[in-house]
Figure 1 (tube, rainbow, N blue to C red):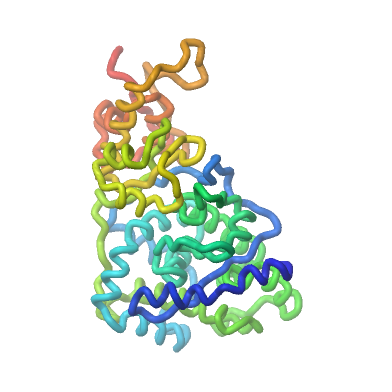
Figure 2: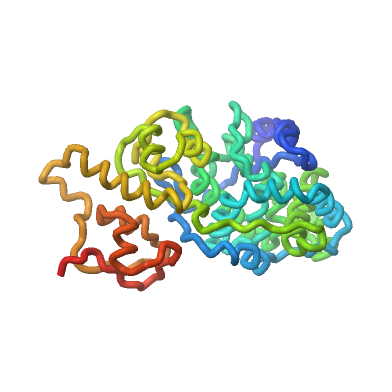
Length: 392
């Protein structure tokens, strides 16, 4: 990281204000450093990387997370156990805060699994912001990942007066997971990857050249980094510790009903935010809370090609958008750029979702589910053959 970038990262005092919003212990704000080479997946006009993960059963979330942990457990360092105790000092408050974070946490877990990133990093937004989509002022960190504007540009996230990709759950999550994967590919140590995320890749590269890679012990690598960087990793391991052994800290981990899972729904044509909320069957305030990246009053595929909605509202919105589009002026007869509503079948490709398939064939998810006898919570699988029309 160059000197100018370091100056941009100075407003770490923002973390004090963020943590003051809750009675949980104050946390340092993370400011990931800009990277030399971006390896994040291709993005759309709004900076959305990858495809929408398919919701997984809520009961599997915590087991999936524990199974994907790859770093030290609760007893590896006294500081880890101490921070775990601080997090859960007020069990009711801890459970309430975690419950509010659960829709975003669940989505992040699915993306991390796609990238092969350990479960500890699914919990990274807990350390950064308690999963709050924090609005950032000019030159300040923003989003639940607390990303600086200069870092957002290096990650391929668009930030302007209409849209802030740092607050876009799919875009920012894919970008961060790609960044962490890149760090691990270089350092081959997830602990050092966390150091790089907090202190900056170039700073950590220099320390490794000077001091060599750290040994497996102590668990918190003995590199001459700032205290806040060492504490960042300690806190990450501490929240993972609570998830590992909740009964040890007398807390219950909440469950997320399938209807509250967040899914990515395409915006197929220009529409006002007020109208979008009506089609989704929810208040405009609730819609904006789930989609804080968008700052205007109108949605359009070129600037905001998707919305994040709970499953309970996504099906309604998807069908209503199709009907709303049908009531709009028809495109010119010679426009053959979009696939027509299909007769026959579609073979599911890896990473493809019902939302994408429905959009491609100008139909709705509900129609595809009914046509193929798919329960609302059943995921489609690569190679699966879907019927596209019930007309032989």
